Image 1 (cartoon, helix red, strand yellow):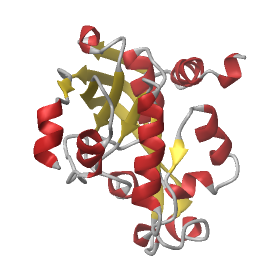
Image 2 (spheres, helix red, strand yellow):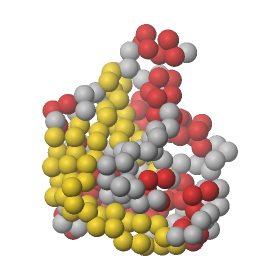
Image 3 (cartoon, rainbow, N blue to C red):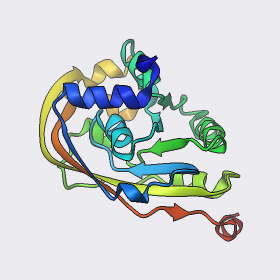
Image 4 (cartoon, rainbow, N blue to C red):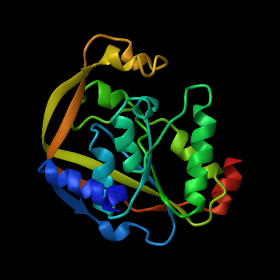
Length: 212
């Protein structure tokens, strides 16, 4: 049973890797409503890290290739993640899947920077440009009592290793231009990391009407 519990798996992973997690402002996490968690993203550890920090399973949207690579596919499934579809259907299927999850008052997680910070080994203090898909979802999804919860991941100590050639990943997702280059996919492992939870932004009916 525990092997199918994303929160348990997340905590065990952090323990196995020896990660020290410091979570700030946990009292800001809504306890009885749908949540759209929005965070920066540099490591494969970010999803389990955020689940452990807010003490709640989060259904993260993840890159298409993660649902294609053996072993990785099983890991993201156990963590409750849902891989994005192929580019032609990606936007609509993400909206449909995320809306269904939010309608059952689950927490959905989005990394608006996309895959680029994961591939390019960015510095800890750098933040990439946010894609606006999470905002479209929040303002278009017919969800009552929806909170957008901003969360910041701040690494204070980490190690980085090269794990797989980028071109190898293009076999699993030829549509991703980030994989059409030389170099290796970095793997960032946090040793000491702080999670700062922002104040929830509640989406109102008037905001949705203005957006329409």
